[in-house]
Image (cartoon, rainbow, N blue to C red; front, side, top):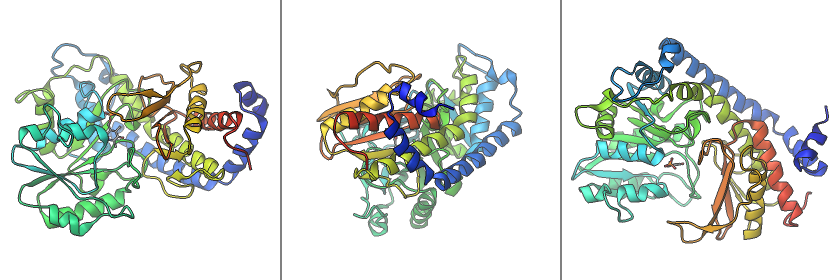
Length: 427
Ligand SMILES: *Cc1c(COP(=O)(O)O)cnc(C)c1O
């Protein structure tokens, strides 16, 4: 087998390839652990599909109102069984993760209610949903208040502060599993379970929603297994398996999910309407592939942390930490290094590989941003992609990879570009 020659044809030098192989040789036990989680989650998905007797009629397209859409309704039963919840709302009419979260929040909070985040500030796009940043149609405009308990400086939960923020108005608690673009750690499902138990101990009956974006199938359990009333995410991240071209999901108690359905469509209509537009094959097959796809992305993240940490670039999570989402941050320390890294990711893509990413001003950001993505589904971040704001500490966030081999190629190519620009040296 001419592996080195194949990589050289793609632009990876022999020395970069060999350095990668040396790193990889030490990662086999980590990879075995990732494979075991994927195997467990694969069985979980297959069991849910078998229980619900998935068959070819469930792949039929519907149009118009979408009444009696058995494929859609059965997919929602499958999701509910995978996440061990009473109900699920899984729809192409949910346009993205932010939309799914906005539906879940606005459906379950009424004027006078208070929303609490016990884990510090939420993901950027939720600031306008909640009204932390003034925005038309925010929850704040509708009279929903917001409270926040920040994490301690070591990233742990500040239980005293959380107890102090729970009051008679507190109706819903929102917990974000992945760090997103913050520097705090991502939370394990076990940690989320402890936090939920604490909050429900302080106020029995309070509802808990978990923003599950980037976390699905990273662990054997999901937050809905440890007390969350709703778990919410995007289908162009983990659970769409790279095949879903759009969509979002909300899994949870029947009470919460019913309200979400009435908010998404209309009071009285709920889950009865919403044609599937021919997307069922992608949704079912994407969910089926998702545990494997997530495992490939995780291997890529672990490989990158080990490869870059050894070259002196700080990584979050670091080379040895356990993983609770698929995001990897690498602090590169300069604008030039961020550009070189992203050019490597882009050059390794199956789509748009000939394009050169450039830092650019973006709406909503106070510094330039660079993005690299060559994806089959535009904006899909379960596919190999990287981005970051061009400002200190000059960190790139990268994630995804539909296959481990492609994630590996992208990471090797990013290193190749850094070396060619004279911005690092192999040990
Ligand atoms: C991606 C993400 C969102 C928002 O999802 P979009 O599909 O980009 O709207 C929310 N929360 C977290 C933690 C995310 O990673």
